Image 1 (spheres, rainbow, N blue to C red):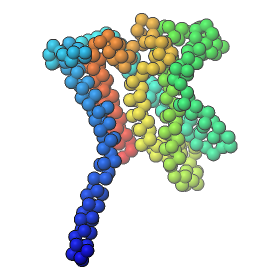
Image 2 (cartoon, rainbow, N blue to C red):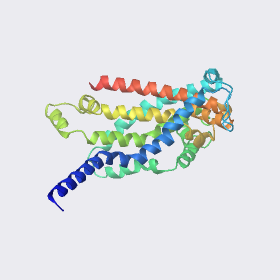
Image 3 (cartoon, helix red, strand yellow):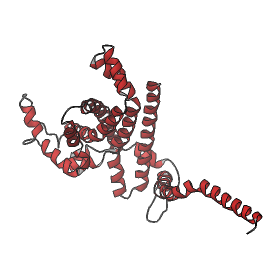
Image 4 (cartoon, rainbow, N blue to C red):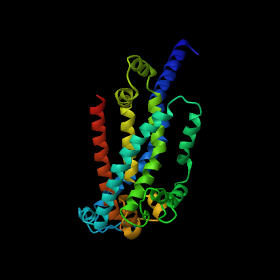
Length: 305
């Protein structure tokens, strides 16, 4: 091989190497992107389109026209408004309360005390336990005549409460179960944020004579702001989709459908073959979640900066 041929070959190999270096990340990401397109992007836009198809039949893929009828029906539905109210109350209580409790408990779990690892492990056990099994245990806690909660309340002279069959007590029971269910994952995120805070801040504060509460509110909470924002966003999305908890505690939406949630309403419409109404309800829920999360992000940026 002549010198000219060797140089030409090296240039060709170098060009191929540059081309492969440019397309290699895309080649590795291609299966992931294809799966996202098939299982996320396409279904999303299909639901958007379906929500505007009046009288849509999924089996024949036919409709009676395009318009806002499905949205008008859903927003005028008493069941949907009841579901929206229950979901809103659930989110408004579960998300901030579970976040506040998680901050306090994570701060306690973060302390270097002998045996603390045992408590950390024990508290995360609900994350690996079946939701239905946990729900069954909580159902026994909420029983009117033999439930642990009513037994404890009875010590303080409180009459027995029908937590599982009488509204709004059933909603309160669902909220208590939701707070407890959210705590392990929320504590995990907050604890990760706490362990990333430089210990130097606390050392300097203690040298200056700062008390524990002042350190907590002036150092810990501000430095946890990004993590708290993430927790609020994740928990808002999760709590807005409350569904399995209804089956775990009540085997459905409560007595007379009093505990309808938006996701259960969507499920029921699909069960009735009212796919366009279900799609419209899903889009309304999506828009509301999007607005709330964007508002949370805006408040977080103002708080952080």
